[in-house]
Length: 451
Ligand code: ADP
Ligand code: MG
Image (cartoon, rainbow, N blue to C red; front, side, top):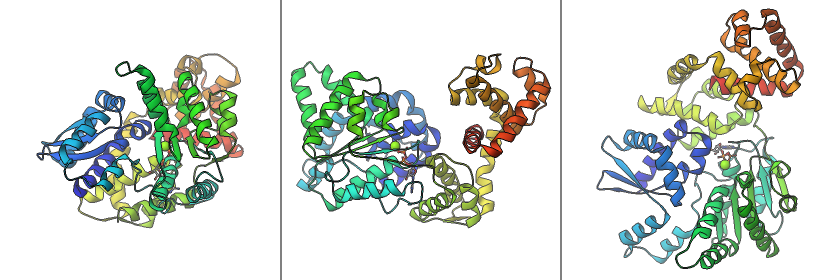
């Protein structure tokens, strides 16, 4: 089983590079390898029927490929939803299971790599780390609720699981429930849809499950926006737990004031501690890379670490993706270490591929997505600031990344004169020297464009 677990981790690493961070977080990373049946079918457990459906609908080919790459050409997979999984487990090891094991299956499965020890503390996250640690030591007393927010891929789930791992170790009798907001919603909706055996009973059971815990963790609460019935249910769950001094931990990719929920819920979020995390600075990024390499028992030359940490990542998961490429490449070569030369080889194909895909059109597309405007607007004639600034940024980026003639850029932007294009380019070029915020935006976009 140990071996299957290790191989599954490799599949996860591969999948991480193929699917979006959200898909990976919500669905793929939650799959649990159960058994390699007859050496040819990998049985995976999903946490719900919808998780199973989502993966089969959107990612089954990628998953099949990655599993084949790691487990061998003839290995396929099968996903069981929660009920099927329970049935399966009951059938397979009913006789072998000790009481302790039964207990364990019901506990949330925290990612064992997401511990406090493995979390690198720097200026960008020190307060969040301290708060999370304090909550882990004294749940339900000090900071309740603990509300953690940050951009995507900056360690929220890691910290939440670190609390979970800590509690599992030092406070094993606590009842903990850890779900994504999506899971909470799906379970609630499922209970609403139950007809057999009675809807009231299903809702009652749902409430029992969520209100009868000592610690409730909800990951990515921002998805609750616009889900009115779920918001209502969550509000009551929250109150119930809060009044009974049960610890609530919430993560979000934006602050309470920016989430689209009623004020009464915002007020609830704010009655404990709200703590945000920023993008880690260069030194912290270096330390994170070192930590990850150390966890993989891998040695990387400093210039490789430097090379990766220097990139203006706004998402640690993406930075890890780059690191995994080096690991992967070196492993193929049968090595447990990598020099800058190896790293260059590892990224070569990548850079080449990316280079080919960068066109003025997809730079425009990315800038539009970023600012939430349309392609017609950006290339059109509107003069309001919300459009003009993105337009100038797009022009600057096309010139900077692709170095194509200004006249051609003018054509793309609705036949503008090349002097207008030059003016836009120079204006942004000047401004980013003075304006940190703008410079961060432009860098962020550049990373997105270059991939
Ligand atoms: P989020 O939930 O904020 O989107 P995650 O918690 O999933 O982000 O973190 C993304 C990846 O980055 C994880 O692999 C996590 O271990 C890693 N990570 C983020 N911050 C740190 C840190 N300070 N130290 C070590 N690893 C980190
Ligand atoms: Mg997360």
